[in-house]
Image (cartoon, rainbow, N blue to C red; front, side):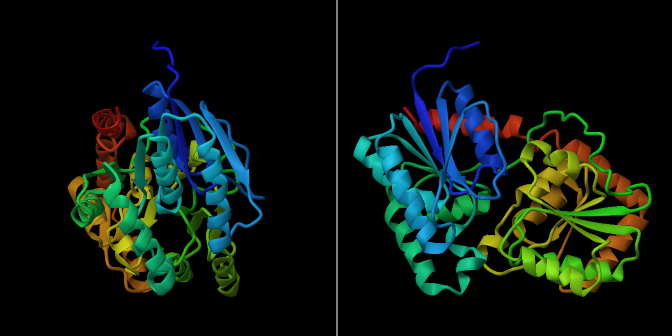
Length: 376
């Protein structure tokens, strides 16, 4: 086994680290490449404890929303990075880039920028022009001065490369192929022998199609249960919707699940959903990691008819991509899929084949080559 050297990589994010599997996998790869890794995030009142094979630190902040949060976090991060010994910075998303860029220039330290989405085109910014312009200005001033960048799929990589004239590489957020130990009481609260489990995992935010899924549950009989894993901005509204439609026995909110356990829940589902709405280019060009999570768990996928999603679904024939305009179309698709046993089983079998290619053990070799090429 190779010994660690004295090189230190500081990786920063604005979340609480619990459910960010992409960042965790990057940290593990850097550890394999003989970096001593320190992951920096923030701690919320609802944050659960974490245990990682690398060092972590989470800032407790006075402000946890909007501009005051970003300001406080980045001021804390600036002085932390400035006075901490490091040989490499990794900035995840645009909301950590300015601080990482400034300190990397001051200390002459290499910087890796990993954009997890088309940040300036997220739905939360589409109708907030002034705030969007601030993020666009920051991106326009900093990104062209980077040596390279990383993002989540080929389409967004091509857009960034063309726009800023630097190489951007696509590193997909695919899951690890590692085997997981079963937890015997995991499904104690569900009767899976008599119910179909429909699963959505990810942020409970606008434009994710979750409202449509909940409305679909009104049309489906009691053999179906919808499980929502994650938290987000519209969580309370969704819970109120469930109460309004008297669906508490058919729609289950599990909250945030640590990624170490997520596969165990995902593998219990019959269908996995990623039905984002076209609320901007970020969603339209997205390739959500939950699609790969479903495939890795051998769960057929129902997703939006967007370019990157459709490409995966059609290439591996693991489900259906469609523009679901309303809950009735979604209802018909669910019924048709689960009533057509031959089709459904063929999709599951194709998931088994696809996951041999769509896993981190293969994808991380691409990232390793990129780092070796650009970081000296």
